[in-house]
Image (tube, rainbow, N blue to C red; front, side, top):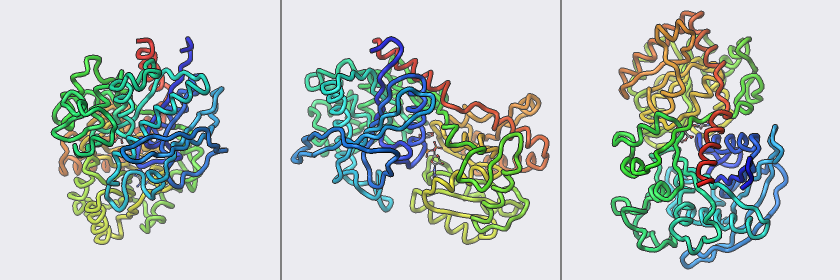
Length: 496
Ligand code: ADP
Ligand code: GLC
């Protein structure tokens, strides 16, 4: 370990521009770049999925085999070096390729069904990550200080390291940080699959990977990692309670060092209304004229009349977590008001169908795109007046941060990172010009409706509304402060 610089390896199942289904993909790349800009050596490892467009020259750098039950998987590792402004080193990306597992149309699922061999796929990925670390040390003399693991798909790396100290003797100095981005996804598999992990059967016990008779990858990671963090201070507190702990509250509170909550930042170069090439017009907090152009273009793109009405934007995965069903329950009430809604999302089949039905019923004022479209997400963030996030729980949330940055006022439920990043409209916050959005506490349709109605009233008072927009657009949402907090954890565990 050098005195001022660490070698950090990040392992994740998503990272933009290679793979993204939600916020994880944005966070991993942006954090890795920021850490590089802070002077650290950063290597990012992710599975080599189908259709990953090459960012720069790609070359094969490693080839090895991993024995998985009866199969011997021949893995290749391809490298890309992404230049990072302000950094002396490029960000090194390693794509772990094993085509039978990763060369598929989806990342985790296809046609709304998880791949049945997800345990095999991410077990292989985790074992390959450790193999790469070993080869870096043996062949290139590169010592890795910290292995930063994201979510259940990478969590088993820490289990292998700590539970098989003999097999990974050479890697015992590597310290692991596990970041939990969403407790709703734990990597739970049937006990009969345990053999696939290659771990000793004794680890199928309550103090390791066993969880109500099944395998739980995230649980194993939480127990074995040298430190555990999550993506906002409020979520860090929430997840040690039964209401938000998704059954892991006991395991999480069992960590004597606690769970640190570090709020996500955003990539302020990618998400910048002044430079965003996906938008029909660009704008700044000083001159919002372009936002009006974006709004009209958005209305047109979603087949709505170009009228001067409030446009409510929604961007997100259609899951129970996001609380969009609350929105469905008040749609008739909302449609009795003069407003439009544009909706971009995909996920649960049932919810998709329900959204299609309400759109068909109120086609004049509801625009809908079911699917995943990165560019359109930028245009909704820019063109809408308000952004709805009625989440039942939200570890951090990035969409509301993009809303703040694009002058699109967030209306959120007061939970997790939403509570940490939105300053609610209140007499005191209006007076201090610090209000950046609106929030409600109960996860109920009524609470959502009242808050939207409050926002609509305030929207009519242009001076107050502009002050809210301004406060949001002027917020520092960059990664710098949070990256420094991660740096703090890395040093603390590296020096242990
Ligand atoms: P989560 O990670 O739980 O999905 P976040 O708010 O942290 O929630 O991040 C969501 C990210 O995914 C944002 O970048 C958002 O723009 C993007 N996103 C979600 N759904 C879609 C979609 N249908 N099309 C394009 N981008 C989407
Ligand atoms: C998860 C969470 C979201 C968070 C994202 C990135 O998917 O649901 O709240 O912003 O991860 O950390």
